[in-house]
Image (cartoon, rainbow, N blue to C red; front, side, top):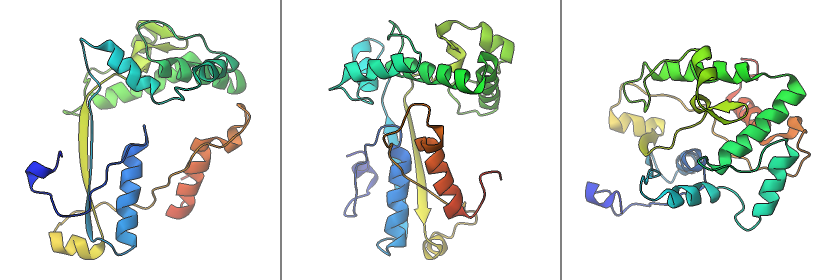
Length: 226
């Protein structure tokens, strides 16, 4: 529907919904189509509408949909098992999830609130240099720490903002690149999709992020230390 008015019709089109992995899942499908010889040039388009100022319940429902809506008690029990707090008003359930995981990380590895603040300050500072960034105000570690508390260890400046957005990428084979006549191209060395597996909460060796990263490093032909 979104592409019809642009004249993109008569070609294979698929809608991809995979929560926060939707964009990378779509990219992987585009790459696989090229690898299979089904296409030379593909277009990956993503868009999300999340801001409804007068309908906060819709935003809350969207966030809740990223968890098991049929086992809310189980989700809350997981948050509690990681040392987190029950969901509070005015914040998404994911902030409670992330805060619980952050607390567990702090307990296991000695990470501090200031360590998280350094990451946020770095991201805000980088965003200030991007004319298309949602927020362009550089922040110091001290400013991040002093911002409005949301749920420990996070302040507002450490949390992801709710926003609307869209992006697109053209993916092509070498022959497709020649057809486009493009002078610049970025090579995708690896794109990996993995799902979570049953593990103990403190079994970080089998964490989905670690397993996926290691698989991507192997495919790309680089080590995890590079």
